[in-house]
Every structure is written in structure tokens, then in C-alpha cells.
Length: 93
Image (tube, rainbow, N blue to C red):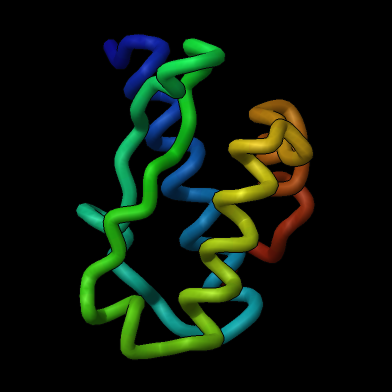
């Protein structure tokens, strides 16, 4: 059984992957492209980008992914929002 941290990480991975699929119609392996860490000041869990050349070499993808991650980190895109959005996305994404 996954712990809460692992479930959050999996939800974020699925959400980002499906958003990329919908926007760019491409499958991107996001393993090692970001990590969950704790904000030193607020103590909240945030996503830290660790983009590889695979992401950095595609400016529009990098910008899109950076924007999604910023929305999540700034709590404009909650876990509940991601869950609901995932349910409304086409299954092919």
C-alpha cells in the first residue's frame, strides 16, 4: 500500500503526463524531471524541477511544464482539482 507522499507523487505524475499528452500529443517519461521537496520557509511540500535535456531541448514543453508546476506549487491547482480534472480528461490522454 502506498503512503500519502507516494500517492501525491503518483497523482502529480499522472496529471502532468496527461496534460502534456493533451497539449502536445506526446508521451513523456517524467521520472527524474522533478522531485517533491519541502519549502524551507513554509514547510509545505513543493515540486522542484530537475529537468533533463529531454525537457530543456523543447522550449514549449519546458514552459508548459514549468507553468503547471508553478500552479501546483502556488496552490492554484490543488490535489482535489487534479483528481477531478483527471476524471474529465479523455482516457486516451
